[in-house]
Length: 268
Image (cartoon, rainbow, N blue to C red; front, side, top):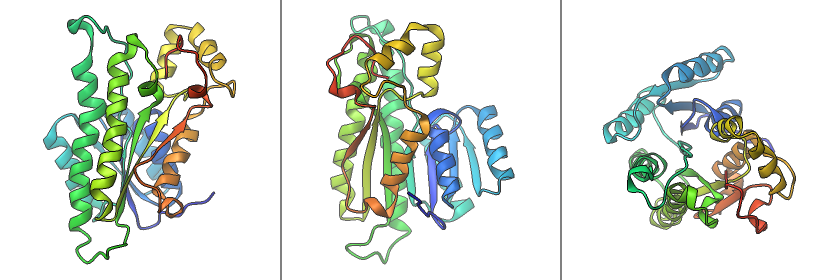
């Protein structure tokens, strides 16, 4: 399916690698102006350099996105460069194991700040800007969309991933709550819950545990690990006019993983 985002501006967090980068590239290939945001400066600059050589209109923004001021500056830089913001994709995620009974090793605050609070705060700032830049919008006019990347971990009881699971559940609830709150403003909010997708985090985990690759494949009905572009395509669909009557929904991209009862394999 071909989507045309010419004249639209998309902000993508977590865009220096993995699914976030795949999302950014698909938006570029669909004609959008794209802002790639992350905290990995060298990787971000390299990817943006390549995209510019290909003729795409892109901007890189590097900073600690867990800080409120950084998020405000991100939106300000977007407006300065491209004048508007039409699409926000909260793709910044960190996967990490945690100890559910040891507060000193649970990683909860770090994961919560990065996987949830960044999405919440940036969505609030972006939504306000979308509303302000469309003062003459009609009641049924769509003025923007927000897409959150989440995980199927919220549906699986995995003690070693309890912090990540809780953050994923929070993101999915955020998606539904903001969808209702912003519907009358013409802003749609949806999510993509991923599982069995070859993200940067999963690739690193497989490198450390070679058996994990076969374990994830065997736990997935389609018998393979998905490509990051497959998850990115779902994001593109949710941002397109083809999904203009969809809001507050979480689309699952997991090769059927959540249809099984295998709870011994991490939901990544």
